[in-house]
Amino acid sequence: MKKIGFIGAGNMATAIVKGLIAQKGNAGFIYVFDVNQAQLDAMSALGANACASGADVVKNSDIIVLAVKPQNYAEVLEALKPSVNESKTFVSIAAGISIAFVQNGLGCECPVMRVMPNTPLLLKKGASALCPSANMPEADKQTIYEMFSGSGVCEFIAEEHMNEIIAVNGSSPAFIYLFAKAMADYAEGCGIDYASAMNLVCATLEGSAAMLKESGDSADVLIQKVSSKGGTTIAALDKLKEHGFYDAVQDAMKACTKRAEELGK
View 1 (cartoon, rainbow, N blue to C red):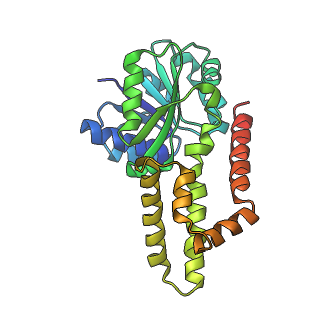
View 2: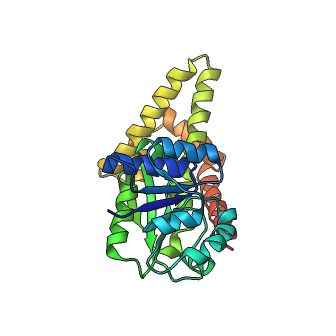
């Protein structure tokens, strides 16, 4: 079994580790380091091996997940340089951080898998975009795929689109939460119990997602099927159009991509 290391033990790393434990039945093959002792202790409580440094994680692991913020990557990679060789495979889960950035930062042509997961991974409902470097061993590619597919859906994406995909699956849960909040807040403002409204909103989002995936109809056709001429849905859609809803979403996604590109410089 491949030994898997994590540098960083925040929410995303914890979600991935819990998924691995659920798949394998133990955490003896997992090595973790974090500067936050409380987070490291939480990983130890799950059965993972706590390490004294990132270098120790690299030494003990075959595949190393870099679960730190994009702004900290350069510093972390520099510290790992003396411990790295091409037998080690790295996984980057930070927005905007390219395969080349990781390899250049390590001073080594190590295999790198660039991954953009999302927070629903915590509930095994994740959506992760993956992009392996050309020199990624097939066995490591499969191991990393299973690492994320065990907690949701995975798609391989060309690296030229990995910054753009962040808006599609990485940051987009926040867009959806805002939409859900606006709906539930409106209901509460009308005197409807907030929890009841949010329950209906969540069920509607789940059902709508199922329709998009399983009905065989396009999004445009599904919109038409809900929109009776002169009805309530048309009135609501007209108001969304008046406020530029579609264009606002597109602009938000472009801003997300732009920020990802800035983080990778």
